[in-house]
Length: 259
Image 1: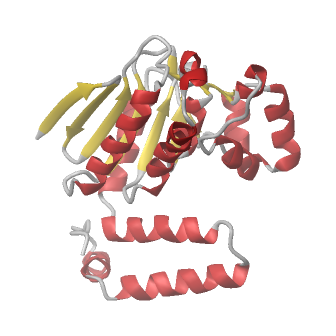
Image 2: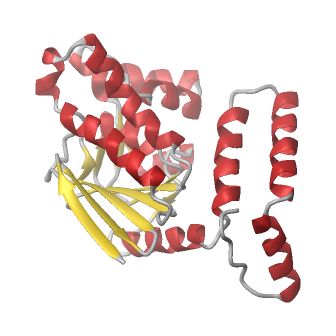
């Protein structure tokens, strides 16, 4: 069943378990403060929707995923609004369902921060990723600064952050900021192929794996070993695990129920 709803600069389409969250302010898809608030609500609703298995984030048109926030609002925000500003992006990373960013053209500022909060990033050859906030006399504050430093390492990150320099698609692929670069005419098909592959997996195991990755990424090795063993032990007694083993033995596709 397909459902579509829009408002506040977002368009959300849900069809056969795949939700597409589209930044709908072409051509640059600038993200306003109101859109930040709406994003938190949208993510919360998708988290609670048991029929949604995969979430895709993309921008309207082919010029930009998002060229960033609406800078005209920056001087009219309160401290509390700025705190909430960043937290809405955090909700994307904490979503228990797998997320894919379909990236075209400009991926700047808040666009970069939203893309880096997704699990998988597929981009076209014209993608340009960057955090140019320093050129406005400010710094990234919605997770982008932290994620770029962790992804690139502090030495390389300094170069891109201090100069506000953009990272082209092939360079982003080399650094792991993009997972695949796909021709523009084929990128949507590739993203949907990945989404269908994710839908065939156990939602229970995916949720547990995402939780484990978040806990392990900044933990000492011994802590990571403990987390993965305990995660395995919990999944060991799930019906999905039993179904997976049974399907493997019977040489068929498993039918996971998320329990």
